[in-house]
Image (cartoon, rainbow, N blue to C red; front, top):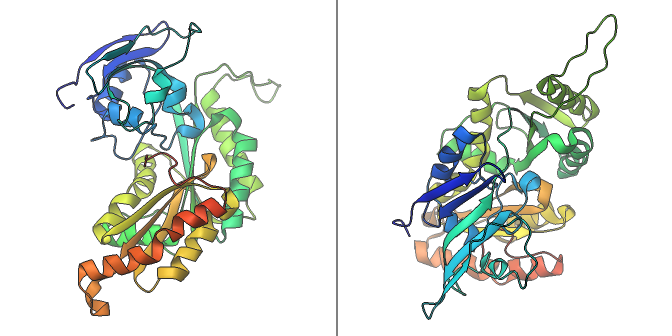
Length: 354
């Protein structure tokens, strides 16, 4: 797939890019940037993941809340079946009701029906400005209340909202040496991004305050209005003042998966759950295997997707070999975790595939 790495062009009339499946996501981002557009998916692994893999797993990522899934944004697709037959559905039409939408079968099928080789993808406009805030709170109930308020106050300007717990933060801090601007002492953290899409925004004028059409100012005002409305829920918070601070906040969130892997052998669960079961399952996993593992919960609270990482502690502590410890914890977790997800009416694969 690495050799299938051509980008065939961008149609700025309908905002559609045609690309080979072997193109790396970050390379596609760089290609689209001069046009003022970006791919609809963004992942921490953007520097290594391929577009074909994003399609094959129906990748979601941190901007799913705003831009939706690869299912929703794929306009055309080409794939090769097991017998060599080429399925060519690369007409790049926004509307086509002439029959079954076969390309949708391949998105999320993980290569079981054929290999995706090319795609046409609908691309959103790059925001003209983004405001990122990191908040700290003492309970997961407060996290959910912040989510409700963020959707209510930020509305269509809300482009991402993520959460992670103290265990995640400590792993990132100790293993990757990434410093959280709010420190390591809080139970939960919420990352909120509000973006300006350049829409005209009339602001009423008065003798004391002239009219303004600056959408960016309004977005910032909305963010501070959010702060005011949740002041009783948060114990600390910071708004990034420049791109370096924005990157530092995002780096804390994006480093979690890498931090757990470097900490130790990791059991990874990519789950969709009712939001009131997010922290319930994390706590149950800690009760089950806290002696042997460090477990953290984080993810995309805006769309109901939690990632639970549970990394093995040093096997020497228990007088076991690394393999013996792994098999012991595996016996605790599986199939128990999957049974709990079924009990909670969730999904065992939210965006990573089976």
